Image (cartoon, rainbow over all chains, first blue to last red; front, top):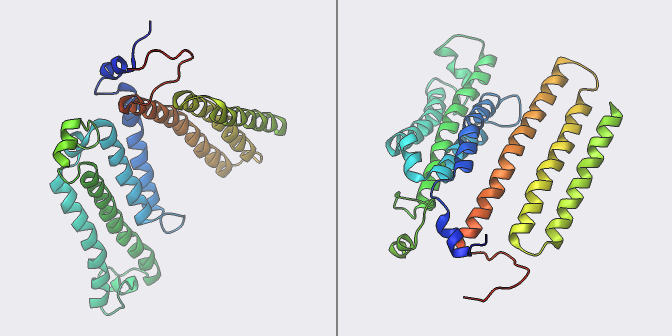
Length: 171
Length: 108
């Protein structure tokens, strides 16, 4: 049986079971890998920025397969803004706290006045704390850039099912 | 062990070559993507399996851990690559890339 291209196009369902199943299988592993990259940032390649990008990519993949509204149920816009700002606040907060406690900006060994452990190991743990903040901020900003660009700033349907009428509205 | 690694590598390169020839020679977008998706998945599986097997030469815990991670890469690429091919093909059909036909039908 031969069908025309237009018929084939009309028969394509809005939800793609192959894509959705694969994304559902892969997203948890991508997020686990992102956390691994953040946590191992100070003794292997990686760090806050790279891990944050991987975590953000997992949510972007989810949004590509399931649509923008589904990804906003998974991670609401309020949480997004809150966590992006909290990430930046953790980074600059720790850095300024070091300066206030008598060290240099981002000089973690000054934090010894809060929790008296070895200053050298404070350097390692301080980097870890800052990287958690960077990772949170980068992840949320990546997601919000994708949301804004995919829906041309409307945050409604996104690329998932961009119909002709929507394109007209945007133009 | 070295013989197994060699055979896997040669097979992998062979399938990569077939995939490349397919991309260059096949007539339209869909059949080219068909060559790229299938051959790359199989060749990548064979080649990276060869790397993982070669790595557990001296049997130690660290080597086995690294090989295990390499096999995880094989698993995830063999899952993601066909899905990506499927998604690209479907998107091409939706935006209207015409498939190649041996006998051209009447144009609309």
